[in-house]
Image (cartoon, rainbow, N blue to C red; front, side):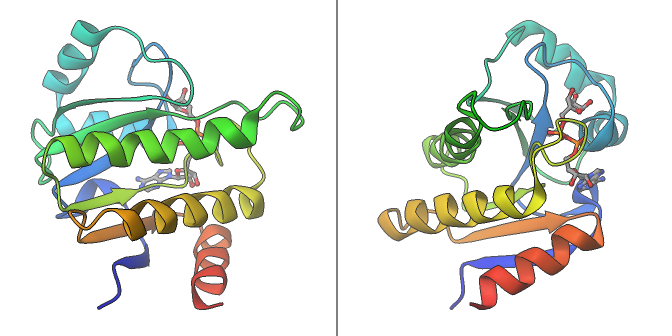
Amino acid sequence: MDRIYVIQGDITKLNAEAIVNAANKELLPGGGVCGAIHRAAGPQLAQECSRIGYCPAGKAVITSGAKLKAAYVIHAVGPVWQGGNQSEKELLASTYRESLRLAVSKGIKTIAFPNISTGIYGFPKELAAGIAINEVKSFIDKNNSIQQVIFCCFDSDNYELYRKLLNE
Ligand code: AR6
């Protein structure tokens, strides 16, 4: 059975055990997918985030899902694109790996990712998609506990890119 899926839609509506948030280092509600997740989860999510307080780029932290269907939110901080020479690629890869590591440590079997860093943070979409798919594939190849990874694309550019790359 295929363990990686791509869908187009709103990540806040998904039934996965964990959804990943494209967070900022301060773990504040913000805009984009982060704003949408906080709105759907309710104020408890921001309270849990403020207790944690900070997360550097390339890392991730975990909270409950508050009012979401998902039991957990993994807040992953992607890099801001600055032209490509500030370790952005390595940091984005690390963001995906660290999220999956956290998921494994909590016994999470199904996890959904948005297209981290490809909105407000400006990471080129095609490059980001290749990195995301590569990291997820190599992680789950070595780790059987994760049963399903969903790439939840919001915009059609990303959806088409993921469909193309996953079918290759
Ligand atoms: N479901 C799934 N994906 C979504 C949704 C949604 N409801 N809404 C937007 N996207 P962005 P970043 C997609 O800007 O680039 C925030 O303010 C969107 O189409 O949300 O990592 C944070 O607090 C894009 O492909 O995140 C940070 O400050 C993807 O989500 C900063 O933005 C990521 O876009 C993070 O920037």
